Image (cartoon, rainbow, N blue to C red; front, side, top):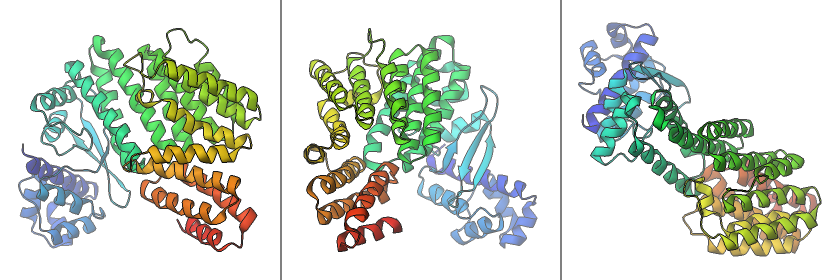
Length: 449
């Protein structure tokens, strides 16, 4: 199928599903939408598409908002349907149930045969679920594995690894909102493959599934949804244990420690990070350094500053000695974790130790090194810098200006981490300079966000 044909087929499937769910015959829908019933029949078969005005009328009649209009646009453009959010289902001959969201947030579930699902996938209509399948051989392998999970092989698993690396790169630019849905959909696909794959590929699938679950946990965390973040992180840890992936299992303890910091459970931060580095033999040195850095963060918040900075020195030494990962299959984040990242992360420790001037200098230097494309990361560091500037320089105008820059990025990326820092900034400004014009302007902008 061509992409346009598969998108038209998707339009027809959704139209038929919505009509049956409403308990309407084609003739009854025809009367409600003022559109000929024979044309509705052809639309449901994927043979034709209604004009824009009739797609809108059909959506209104079926209570689907702009969903049908969006599907029609995808079919006319020959582009992919970008709305699927979940792909639960069984294995081999069992159907796939595709959840789609209307623009208003209502879920519509369409049941497809696995054969039809694979055809739609191969035609490009579902590329938001499995993007980047441009190579014909790769496309054939992945779609065959979807239809028959026993056909999973190393190349199919390699495809999912490459897509995950692209998600990590995109996250630094786009933030969590645009990535969460495709990541969750891909988790569902991988979980299906795990259920039906041959034993030789069970552990590799569990390993990559664990990495996707970790990504889902991170995206929920960046959205401020900490309960979901912890749930996905624990699920990732479970899959890592099943795969025998000691690196990922230890990394998940660090991730849980990171989430605990956002709930002010600093004892938990220390305990979880310490557990991650308890058995260092065979552990990736960068992972040991990351765990030490996270443990130092918890100690700083508990007022144990000497122990905190000793651990940061230990982490820096490990990173100097091991600038590159020694285990290629470690979590993606560790491939990019280096001395600069450690230094940026240490700023929070300097703030907690009463040295905001050092924190501000660190953050300014790190922002200067960031590529302009990494919008979300720039916004987060700018928000942290604004707080440090207020505490160190006592300059409400500069702090509020930096805060406004970060707020603009927070709106674009939906990053709750940026908003969290900005709420701290606003609290500091209101406590010390509640009547200052810049402080007032920033407060008004933040509360209106």
